[in-house]
Length: 341
Image (cartoon, rainbow, N blue to C red; front, top):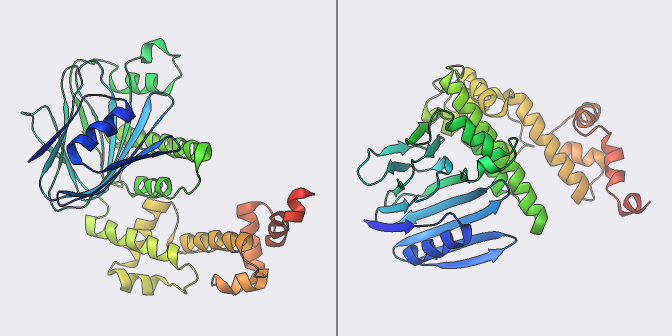
């Protein structure tokens, strides 16, 4: 087993120590570090950034040829780790002798160790593991205004005691998977990229904290309504519809494609997207139409046809509901002449 030890909470030093342990090459751009590894031992990328309120984020997309243990030592501080597994699985323990707990695909975990206790992450060999780790520092929370995020995180998870380990694994959550895809889909650079990432990360934090609250109060009924296979099928269908919104989907065809009953389809789409299947298809078509209006020379009628609608008046109605203007008005607002007027 390969062992890598991280002795710091500073993002720059974390990447330096990861490079020493795993090899590869670090790049830095727009306040974001990226470690690319391509060797017989490991292949993949680790990306990380730091933000205000003592927040930092690490994203692992790795395959190792042998089991890997990453020890995150904790001599002076007790940050709270919010982890989400998008692919594969990840195990965690406190120190080297504690019980290993497995974080599976589509699950979230919230972890913090007592002082002088390390957090240990176990990556299984020959498995593509994708994990997003959001770290919220709490060491200076008392000296910061009470409305700061890290102060509230500390109060939420250490209200009674900060001298014991804290570990929570949540129920399966596909909404967080969608947000992480949105995070990874950011194409902007510089300060815009940093601000967009920070905004989405805080939404993910809110979702994870809310899920913890729901699970503790037994108010979330979504956890056991779908099996893992059913959730994976719903996710696969969602991605297929996003990529091909113009196709003439029906509940029957999607049910046949996925092997899921119509009731399971509706249940899954409401769980992930808060929409019925048909509402999700319509939503994806409108989003594609907006892109075509901005970036193509097609007229509105051609766009209506391209995205699978048969009624221009219906398209105009739902487009206006989404963007507060007609498609024609929106297209005019995107023209250089309108911008400079």
